[in-house]
Image 1 (cartoon, rainbow, N blue to C red):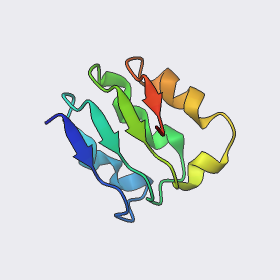
Image 2: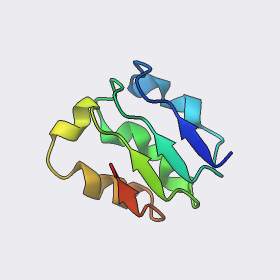
Image 3: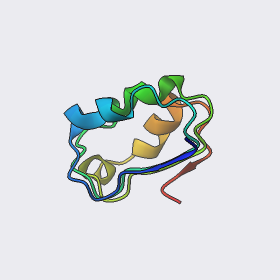
Image 4: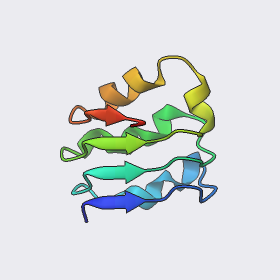
Length: 82
């Protein structure tokens, strides 16, 4: 799987296990969900092919610097929120 769109599904931090075991994902869309902590996306640290993630509209995006945290979690990321 190269692309996974889970936007607007009311997903919470505890639901992030849903993306476990999908290391081949290149594009991940999680916008409009109820994810409160960028740390709940720590699972992405092993996703070496992930290039783009969209988390716009998630509560944690209201905190300054969340993009830098995502880049720190997943070293292959090139684009956060378009």
